Amino acid sequence: MRFFWRIVFCVFLLPYTGCDLRTPSRSAEEAATELLAIWEFGDTSGISVLFSADAVYADVPNDRELVGIEQITGYVTHVHSWASDIEIAVQSLRATGESAAIEWVMTGVQDRPIRGMIPMATDRRFTIQGVTLVDVTDGRIHRAVDYIQVLPLIVQLGGYVTLPGGGVLGEPAQN
Picture: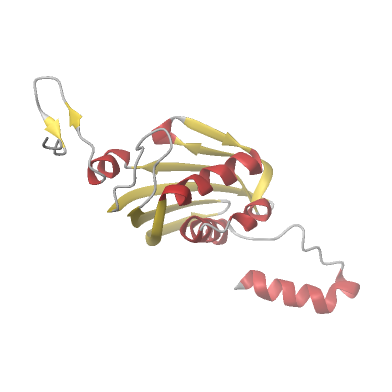
């Protein structure tokens, strides 16, 4: 909401103040909240304003680092390419200075194949928990890191893991 009022202020007083909308003065808390909204709704049009051009987004469970607007946009759109009915509930948000930590729960339905992982739609609902850390400089995210519980997602979608000694996480499909 503060960004909205900044726009209103700048539009009316721009000739007198030299206000510059290209460099938003968003806090780490505001940036983290905006980021989760992008994740929830899949509208990636705001990524180029929210992130610095050389931003890094670490996807820890998949051991990937995405660099720059194009790769970060691809990271978000990938989830929306296989899931629908996505909702994100914030469990906690802590921000100090230029950093924020946000704990969240994402729910949705896997109704399309997950490229490179699940070649079909399971039409199963899923719930995953995660934490996103955000570092902001000059009102833009320059680094974000996701820590996500991936194994519960795989099990919820019908996968399983066979452990040494015969233990199984999840339930193997019966033929």
